Amino acid sequence: DGGITQSPKYLFRKEGQNVTLSCEQNLNHDAMYWYRQDPGQGLRLIYYSQIVNDFQKGDIAEGYSVSREKKESFPLTVTSAQKNPTAFYLCASSIIGLRLDGGMLFFGSGTQLSVL
Amino acid sequence: AQSVTQLDSQVPVFEEAPVELRCNYSSSVSVYLFWYVQYPNQGLQLLLKYLSGSTLVKGINGFEAEFNKSQTSFHLRKPSVHISDTAEYFCAVSETDKLIFGTGTRLQVFP
Image (cartoon, rainbow over all chains, first blue to last red; front, side, top):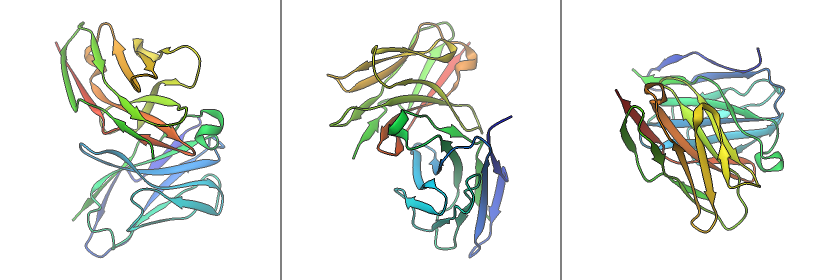
């Protein structure tokens, strides 16, 4: 079955530690996105990538980093510089730039990150 | 920059009653609009989308939404809700190459 796989489902971070959230898709989608979800704040865009080896900052990129070495994979690293990392992180993908074909986003099931 | 406002953070309703979840957007250009649903501890699923054409859009699970350009609104409606509709609902607008989401409305259906 085609879809987006996020792992792990739950992740705990110690003070000063970097952690990496995995996102893999087998939908052959060009674009991939990372959103952060906090209660009452909706979804906020962290980073997105429309093509391999290229990515753009979203609205809240500080304290995060990404890479896009393969079309199928878009891992997100939460660095120690992110002082409030506790949140639900969602990865998504789409066929191509959203306005070009009115495409929609396909979402993974999310990773809950908590600080120890 | 475009933005989306969901006016109600929570909407409680009894089973089989009608419901309307409100969404307003700000944009100076033509827009694509979406409603997504999120069940607990899951990702988001597309309910429906407006790209062009008829202003009344029908989606899955009996939901529909009406695009109103003059009022810049895209309200979501269902004539009779079920317990299983309890979830969080997000309105979104496309901007060039990404989606901008509202803050969400929690729909709580009571028996």
